[in-house]
Image (cartoon, rainbow, N blue to C red; front, side):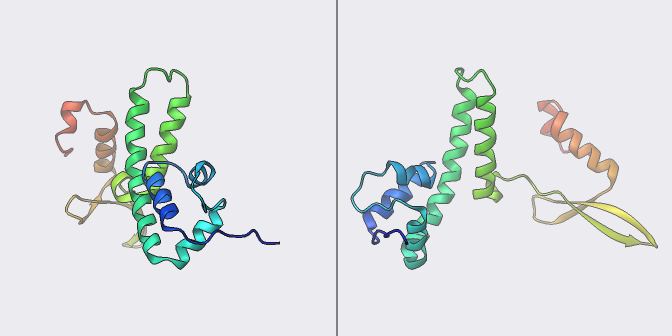
Length: 164
């Protein structure tokens, strides 16, 4: 027997979007919501999203803002001295992962693609990385190694200078 679903309610929908934009997961929002006619199930919210374009637009924007909230949480957790164990590291990693998935262009890793190409009857690995101008730059193995070293290990003063 199917669970009864709550009818769409704009006040509840606004509350859901506000809470998500503040960084809370949907399940927690539904569990803690005290508003009348609040849905108890994610499936009800998903149904509302399918049936109401305005709510869908607000929800998508709330998810984007959620990434910003998670990013802010990362800084707060990292600066908090009370997390001495591995819990802070796990909390930060989870938030970094979610922020990167919710807003990959802003919080995701810069993609490093590899492509196999045939050149003069021999197969070579070509490393491709996007430049700031949106163009693609082909890197040989030595330059790729310099870029990786520069990114990971160079002192702060050297990171301001492009690797050659």
